[in-house]
Image 1 (cartoon, rainbow, N blue to C red):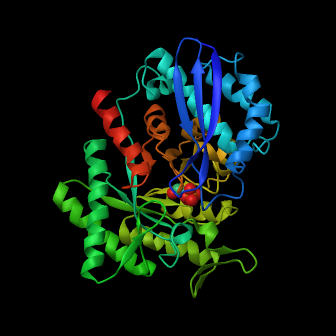
Image 2: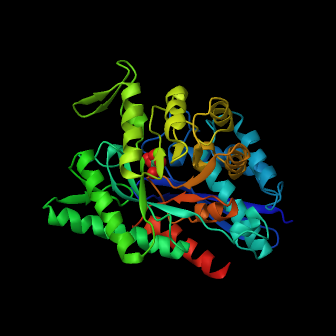
Length: 400
Ligand SMILES: O=C(O)[C@@H](CO)OP(=O)(O)O
Ligand SMILES: [Mg+2]
C-alpha cells in the first residue's frame, strides 16, 4: 500500500454552471486520482450536508487534509473515509461538507487503483468483478425540480431490461431519447431539456406516459429486445405535509390515493421501476405500495433512505421497499455507500447506483455500479456529464 502524500482541492464547474469541489490525491509511489462532487436539486431532507464549494474547500483544507497527507494509505479506503469522518466530527459532514468528503474519498480510491494499475471497479469490487453489468436507467422526459412548467413526475426512465449488453442498452436509451423528440415534434409540442438532459415538455403526466410508452415500444421493435420504462416520482416534492396530500397541479391525492395511483400505473404501463413514489418520511405508505406491487416492479427509496444505513435498516424492518438508490454524495464517502449496498443486498434489496442532477465528468459511479454488481445504474441518457459515465461503462464492458 502507498501513503497519500498530497490532497489538492479546487472549485470547478458542475453541469448546472455552479461551483463544485474537485479533489486530487497523489501517493508516495506516484499514484494519482481525481474526483469531483455532484449536487442534487431535489435533495432528501436527511442527506449529508453539502456546503458552498469555497467553504467546503477551506474547511477540508483546515480539518481533513492534515489528517490524510502522510498519514493514511490510499488503498485502505476504510481508513481514508474514517479520517474524513474523524476530521469532520459530525454525523452529516456539517463541518467539511459532504461535497469535500466525497471528492476526496473518490479521488483516493482512484489514486489507489492507479497505484495498483487496476481499473477502479476492480480495486473497489475485487479481481473477479467485471462479468456482470448494470442496466442503465435513462431519463428521457422529466420535470419536477429539474425543469419548471414540465411534468409533475420528475423522471420518466427508459429501461432496456432485455438488452444483451450494457453497450446495447446505452444506445437503446439514447435512441428512446431521440424517439421522444420525434413524437413530440409530430404532436407539435416544443420541448427544452431539463437539468439531466431529459426532454421537459409542458405536457401533463398522462400525455408523458403516452409519449414514453410509444417511444419505448418503437425502440424495442427497432432493436429487437425489451425496452420498458420506470419513474422517479420524487414524491417528497409533491407532498404537502400540512394538508397531507400530494399535489399534481390542481389534482390532489391523499396517501391512499397516491398508493392506488402508482399501483395502477405499474399495472397499466408494466413499469419496471418506481423511485420515491411517496413522501420521504412515509415508510408505511412505501410499505403499502411494496406489498401491492413489489413482486412486479422495483420500489426504490432515494429521498427515503438517502444512502444511510440507519434509515435503510428502518426500511428493511418495515418492508418499505425492494430497492435502494445509492448516491455517494448523499452520505459522503465510498465506504458508507458500500455499507448501504451491502446492507441492502443482504436483505434482498436491489442496489441502484445513481448520479445527481448536477454532475461533472467524473466517472466513479460507473465503476461503483460494476464493482457492486448493481442490477441498475441511473445516469441519464444524453449530455456530456451523463455520457461520461455511460461511455465509461461501454469501455469497461469492452475491456473487462
Ligand atoms: O432525485 C434523483 O434521483 C436525482 C437524480 O436523478 O435528482 P437530484 O440529484 O436532483 O436529487
Ligand atoms: Mg430520486
